[in-house]
Each structure stands twice: as C-alpha cells, then as structure tokens.
Length: 270
Image 1 (cartoon, rainbow, N blue to C red):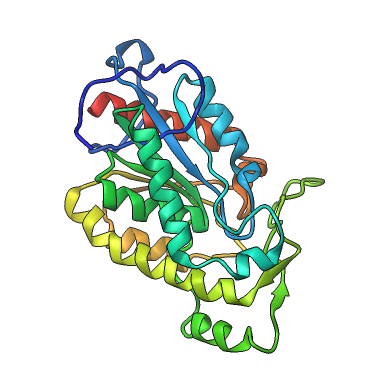
Image 2 (image 1 turned 30 degrees about the horizontal axis):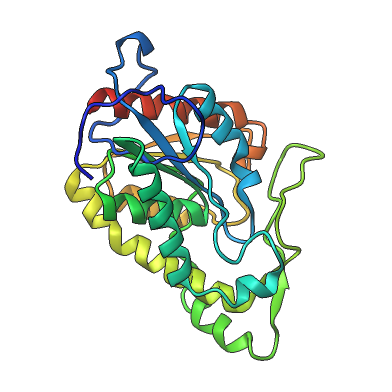
C-alpha cells in the first residue's frame, strides 16, 4: 500500500489497518499529529469472538480512528465449524479485512490477541505495515502438538476449552466451550506462517508493541521470548494485573490506551 499523508480522525468507525516505521515511546501530542487517515485491524484469538477485543476497538474508535473488527472464519457459531476451517480461510479473511481498511485509510495498524497476534504479525509483514500491536501473542505450540492433534482428532474430536484465562472476577470470555483438535492442527500452521514472517519485520525495522501478561496460562512466555529474539525492535509493556485475555481483564483500559498511543505514533511517523 503506498504511504501517503492522511488524517487520524476518519469519521464513522469501521475497520482499519496501520503501518509504522518508528517505535512509539510515549503518548504523542494529538494536536501535532499530521492529517493522516488511520485505522486498526483488530483480530481476536483462537475459539473466541470479536467481543474479546471490543474494549480495544472502542478505545481506538474513541480516539478518532477507523476500526475493522472481523469475526474470523469458523468462529462465533459452533465448534464443528472451526474444526472444518482450514488455515487458508483465516489468512484470506485477514487479508481481505486489511485491504478493506487500507482502501479507506493510508495508515493501517494490525492489532491482535493470542492467535490474532500471530495473524497481525503475518499480515503486517505481508502488507509492509507501519507497525503492529500484539497482546499475549501465540507463535509456537509445544513440539509435535500440531501433528499429534491431527492424529487424535480422528478418535477424539475435542479437548477442554482454552478460553477464560482472566484474573478479574465475574468476567466471561465469549468462546467455544471445547477446543476442536483438528483446528489445533490448523492453528499450528498459522503459528508457523507467523514465525516465517518475523525476519521480514526485523529487516524492515517495523515497530512492534507487545503487551504481555506475566501470568498467562494459555501461551506462556515462549512465544514472547521468540518474538523479542527474532524482532529486536519489539517494545514490551507488562500487564501486571491481567492474564491471557487482557482486553477483558484488569488492564483493559491500559491496553486500549497503549494501542491508541502506538497508532498515533505511527501516524506521526508517516
């Protein structure tokens, strides 16, 4: 997508994508932001729905940017649909959402949680984004998990749900009550493609903001360490009061604020 100057305030909230080439360090003066139309492509996690990222979308919209918040293929219906969804369908949906946003905004920043973080890194590398925000991103399953899941799926279609890793009491994540094993095999492919995209981001100097919970019962620290090692310009901010689904947790406001600050810095860099 060609880089042009556009305004960060783009009217009616919709869907968006952003690119960045300098790492944001603090909240920029909004009055100094150039007239740049910008938006965020916001991607939810595995087995979940856009509701897990609604607070982030609301914060981005309130800051005057456009938002694309797609329901990813196989999600939001029944687990059997996710089991039947290939990784290719998810990649295509993400690319289409990015391009819809890119048709309206000159600056598009992918923002993703967990699997959505992997997809955000992948599309940021594909589209040469100005930057990318990831929240407790997943990049690697335990060795052999994907292959084993494909085999076991023939005799045991599902395992326990991975949803709901939230420290805040009385908060429920909208997600499937079980995890389809065939889909775990496809998730392994999504993670592999994201890992393959990391050298592109590193070589381009694409700024990455990683918001990470120190206690994460879903992805742990392996993926975060991999991202920092392979993309050295990654800036890490710790969400000390939250677990995996941080946008629904105690640090929800902080996640939204840091995301909008990052987008504003991306706009300024353009």
